[in-house]
Image 1 (cartoon, helix red, strand yellow):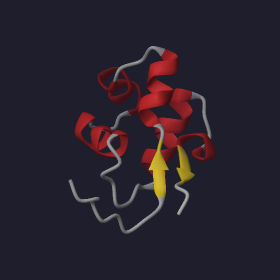
Image 2 (cartoon, rainbow, N blue to C red; image 1 turned 90 degrees about the horizontal axis):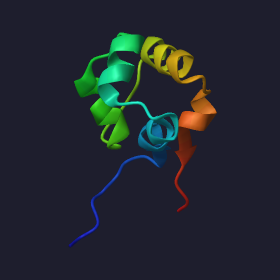
Image 3 (cartoon, rainbow, N blue to C red; image 1 turned 90 degrees about the vertical axis):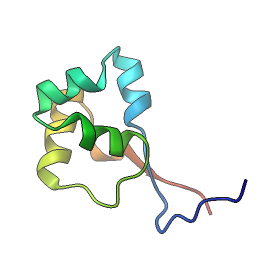
Length: 75
């Protein structure tokens, strides 16, 4: 299978953080006020952008920082 082209090096660790906290996307959605669809796009590394209001809400609920949620992939 050919490697998919990615135009950025940002990796989202939402899945790992949710697993570590025993939380589901649905629960995060309810607590953060962000749709499950938008959270799923983030979790599956398909997001092209994120609103600061969404990032703030997710980080508040998860008790993390943007630096915990995102890292840069090695090239």
